[in-house]
Amino acid sequence: MIIANWYSAGINCIFSGFWFIFEYARNYQKKDAAKDQLVNLLKNGLSYVFAMVLGIMLSAFLFIPTVKALQGSSRGDLKWDNLFDNKITGDIKTVLQNYVYGATSAENSVALFCGCIVAIGVIAFFLNKKIKVSVKAKCGLLLLFAILSMYWKPLISAFSMFQDVNGYWYRYSYLAIFVLIYIAGEYFLGSEYGMVPTSVSAILLSVMIVLLNHAKHAQPIREVYATALMFLVTGFAFGLVIFIKSKNINIRFYQSSILLMAFLCIGDSVYNSVLLMDKYAEHDSYLRSKEAKEASKQISMIQSRDRGVYRITQTYAGINANYDEAFAHNYWSLAGYTSSPNDMQRGFLDKAGYNIMGPNFCVVNTSMLGIDSFLGTKYVLSSYPINGLKRVKDIGEYNGRKTYLNPYALPMAVQYKDNNVAYNLANHFEYQNSLYSKLIGKKVSVYQPLNFSLVQEGDIKQKKPMIYKVSLPKNGKYTVYGMIPWNTWVNAELNVDDKYKIPYSSWLSPVVFHMSTDGSKETANVSLAAKTSYDIKRDGVAFYALDLKEFAK
Image (cartoon, rainbow, N blue to C red; front, top):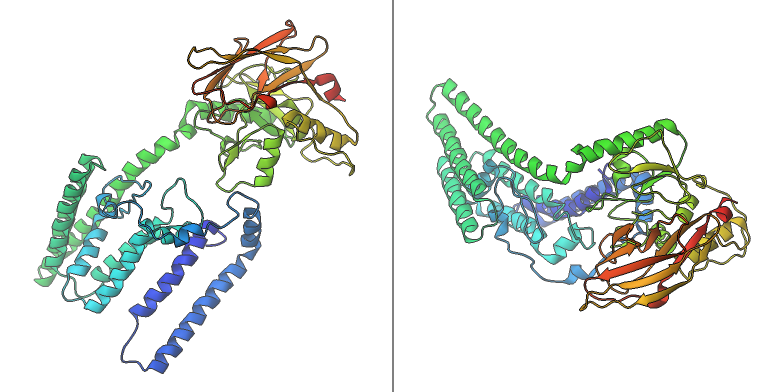
């Protein structure tokens, strides 16, 4: 399991410790001597520890490098605080309220639907008077533990691998489902099941689910009633099976009733799966969209044309931040999204101008020719031309994006001699200058600063944008960039000569922006129309030109 999925394996390892305690308690016999009980506990405990250690050792060739890699990420440190935060989050009643067709988990509200027959079996287990109280107590504590793992912060922290969770809630909920199925199995596979507990359980569940969802409209009412009806049908169908078996009626009737139960249980699960697939399909709609097909064609044409080793980036990543398109279409990119990114890589991209956004990724939805070339970006998919890039004319336009070749792209790996050139962290452009200086072994300035002035202060009340006037290079070939860094998001629109407009200082917006110039103008106006404030880092505003002649050397 550790080899297949280290995250799930970690969760399972934690759960296995609690399961070991439950199994020992479940099989505990009072009649055994204290010495025998201690020997048995030590024997089983050592077997458990040996199995766990052996499992980790067998997977060490993957597990240890993964742990080492995680230590360099934003999730490299374990968050111990929540382990000592004795709080209940959410409403525990949602466990039953969400036991409805098509329900999905949300923050503080878990969905554990795994079939009507399972819930009936769990309730019937505790209603059945033939089952020993001690057995009920042990299974009851197990069930309570499973439920608390969704709502009690110390257990949430443990099963979240001691990390803060901001999405994909209750990834370990399959463990609670396992507990439900286990308890239901204890009832149905035992000899103590009966018609009355099963029927009563079905009625109780139907009534409780309807009442809970009427009190708070958490789930679609249609699915609530469908689930309640299926509880009744399943409960009484199973009662019929028990009745036919107890009366020794014709074997064909018994077989037919078993077949009916099988169809009900399968149909129950299939219907829920269909609803869930429809919901999750909304999140995966990109893969079936026209946009995905067009992107796949464009990438395939690039790869069939050039079978080398290089990166591809694009100047648009979608409003939902489709930063993992490189995985979907099988190419290397500077853009990427992962729950445990390497912070050294993110820090490097941030210094170079691709700003960090949240705990998971950097904003790569523009093209900075200097750092792109340094990192081996050979092709750029863009809806607008970029000075220095050459249009690949034999590849058409897809999704409004043409294919551009970067003739300055370096190999994915380069050699350089160690030297004393220092890194300049004054701004993103000077940092790139220092990178190339380090690579070459002497000071170079591929980016050159441009003169600019603030010609109009921004005013929210009067709806006046902040405007900078930038002096453009007069001679030679240049690609011009700018940045207006902020202290806090101002939710603005950036406008360069009414030719280039992007959201700025907001979610998914870049810090460094490209300024399309054709050499016909001596100046450019950059306006920033903010919605909330003009909380700008005035001393950090900069405009630079990438000297393509110098860069080509």
